[in-house]
Amino acid sequence: MSDKLVRTLGRWTLAGLVLNGILGSGVYGLPSLVAGKVGPLAWVALILAAAAIAVIVACFAEVASRFPGTGGPFLYTRVAYGDFVGVQVGWLQYLTRLASMATNINLFAIYLAEFVPAVQGWWGKAIVGIILLGGLAWINIRGVKSGAWLSNVLIIVKVVPLALFVVIGLGLVLARGAVESVPGPALTAFAWADALMILIFAYGGFENAIVPLGEAKNPERDAPFALFVALVACAALYTGVQVVSTLALANPAAHPRPLAEAARVLVGPAGAAFMVMGALLSLIGWFGGAMVATPRLTYAMAEDRVLPAAFAKVHDRYRTPVVSIVVLAVISMALAMSGGFLSNLTLSVATRLVVYFLVCCAVPVLRRRDGKDPALPAARFRLPVGPLFWITGCAFSLAMATRMSQKEFWILLLVVGLASGNWYLSRRGRQS
Image (cartoon, rainbow, N blue to C red; front, top):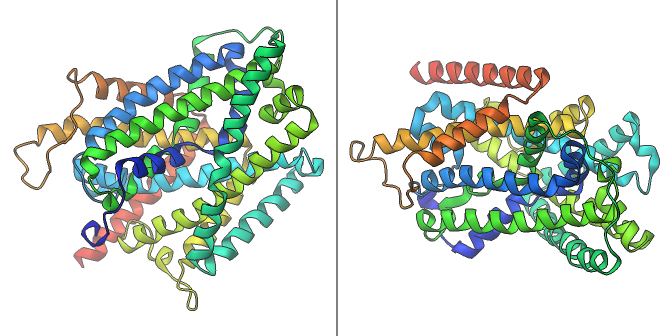
């Protein structure tokens, strides 16, 4: 399929796509969650998480440098382990996006409550989710141009409010002096692990951003560059946000809208309103992009028999993947109502960790086939220091996955079972 795509993406454009994939709206809610685990040392957790993710990104960089085509982790794992594992990864990536949608619905309601306190309840969140997802689903059913236009118009609000928050906030904090922090929680190994688990959500998304490598000018060379540039930029911005929140608020963990509260302390009500509007617009922009991209992913997976054929059904008039769009909205809404911000965030991270583990393990699997499989391209980027990177990446992913709850474990098991059943039926259908 990739040979039919026009290769127009340069290395900096690709880096921008990865940056946009990583830089999500969750940063508006994460400072309070991380501070609740490790207190004022949350900025240290951000740096540790960036270092850990850098190891995983390095493994992705080597694996991605072998493939000039479009596909991302689904393609990598299918080549490394076969169709069965590739199908599992495809389904898990879909679950990741569903859980991320549910996470951000909760975050949207949390920030909207600054203006409309009534949405903090279950029914308020339900009404917000129905209006938001229903409206975006309707827009995208009517045509991809409408959804893509909305995403492009709102994408800039991801960066501008956060950059202003860091630059102006640091200036004001340095001029006035930091507030005295309240004592943080006990710093146990489990507390640090839980903080890192939360922060994987902040740094996740790079694996989706490298899917369109089939449209890059020199994907094998530019993928490693784009991954590392985007990760460094995000780590710097996230750390700045956490530092300002920690210095401006005595206890960031006590505020569900930490950036808005920090802006209120530093600038006043106008600052809080600005950050709330930035969060809401950023979330709408994220939802707009997800509503464009995810249904096309499930449509392609259905065309390839990775998902049931119904996901490939298109609207008779608008020629859009109507079933994929509706299913995305309905399941995301159900997950949002069945769990809160942290619960759905953990589910999203748990599914990502399984994918990260499999891609890290793919490094030695593919290396062993070098020179033996003529169909496998050689790696244009090779990790140094022997097996250190992929072993560390596998160990970190596995260790973090142990922090998932029973609920997340059973949901993962259910999805793996459904994926296995669909793979078996699809395989039997092809053989017959």
